[in-house]
Amino acid sequence: MIALLNGIFFTMGITFAKPVPSTCMGCTDVVIPIPASTSAVAVPADFFGFGFESGLFHHYDNTFSNNMVHSIQSRMSKPLVIRVGGTSGDHITFEKEQTKVASDCHSKNDICTSLNNYTVGPGYFDTLKLFQGSHWTLQAPMGDDMKIEDTMAFLQQAWDAATNKGANKERVAAIALGNEPNWYKKYDVDGYIQRSQTIEERVVKDFKLKGDETRIFQTGEIAAEVAGKAKSPSKFTLLKLITPLFKAKSTQQKEIKYAAEHYYQVIGGNNKDHEYGTEDLQNTLMNHRAITDKLAPYAQDVKSLSAIDKSVPLVISEAGSAIGHTKVEFAGGFGAAIWAVDFHLAAMSRGIQRVCNTHGPNATHAWWLPDDTSEHAKTPAVQGIFPAAPFITDFIGKGNLGKIKEIDLQNDFLSAYAMFDQKTGKLSRIAVINMRQWESGPAVRPRYVAQIAVDKDVKSAVVQRMQSEYGAAAIGFDLGGPEQNVTWNGEQWSWKADKGIGHKVAGYEEEHLTITKDENKNGKISVNVWDTEAVIVNLS
Image (cartoon, rainbow, N blue to C red; front, side):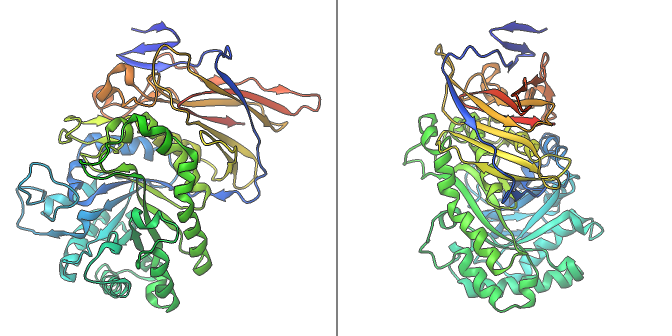
């Protein structure tokens, strides 16, 4: 049964905000100038990725998680890369006699975290046999307490499960060498390089890698607290690692496929410190200047890496809106979805080659919760941040590869990006993100009215919207009910409604913009972008 009330479709208890004609109450006109495609940055087809905390990986051994990953993988022209790693991944050992539980953190507390030491049994690695359309980044445990034999025993089991004992080696995109080695206590940069080399030699030998197969290693994995600081005082930064490693021009250098750093927009404290909530969104997550300022050191590392070795790109192998003491409506709500869109598009426009969005079953910043073990939800759930994933992958596109360029609007709360066809250089898509924070209430929802000039040969302009009628605090249907639902292009995802498969909302209609022509037959379009909303305009 479908009913229409105030421009909102209701179906199965799920809402979808249908675009309504602008009356220009609360409107702000803005011109989006389209730049030349010169200096636009090529975007890899596998830019978007996910990540699972190593010790908690078995929580994702279910159909729901498989559906969630597939719903994004199906939009990509190359396999989505999933990183299995994190702090726990440096303190994890394989015990073949451990058959009752897949993973054991040996904690006296009810909740296992990334800070525990883990032993895993044979059943742990079954999860690597799932997500068949995706590829893996596997972390080699390299913590202070790890012995090389234990590292290799774990890696061998992971490799065999992911590649079907070497029959499908391409399923492993990379082997990450440890996690946040800048926190290691027993060895410094030189020690890390030596231990890495030992592991690389064993992997090449034990996994029978030859030729280009040996270029499989991911180095660095520098913590966000270090990577996100310009001129960090740390003795262990990415460049302080890469410079001596590549200066030697050794075999080890030739086997490095990626350099990796970590990124969290907000790094909170423990429970005694400030708990971030929706009142903090505008100055932290929903703020273009905050995002680009935070990305500046990473952009510099892209340039520095290229100057040393153009064949080694930078990836952000662990990313999240926030860690620390945060409410779900801050870190995992719709405001965080707005952040995620702007952050990913800003990152790709600065030459970062991949972002893997990290997950834990108890993380407020997670894009979905795989089971009922989270403290804040106690149920499987799709969180309000998730629609950002299909937005980002749809903006990249599944057909012809694109190249991106940010459009500098000189606005902390409005950003825009142009995607050009890599072959023809023609403009194919425009993304506009309105980061002005809005919460549901009686007041009129303000909007920008974006004016965009298009080429003479553009015949069609179709809008896709990421939206929530509840606003920035929406945490999704599963946790917030119908009024807090979130939507991408008329599609929604829910544990309760579709087990993560996704479904189109009844009554959805594709939104076509009118193209007006001037006396020279140049085109112009006008698109409403409401506060706390992001859109893609597809041109053809």
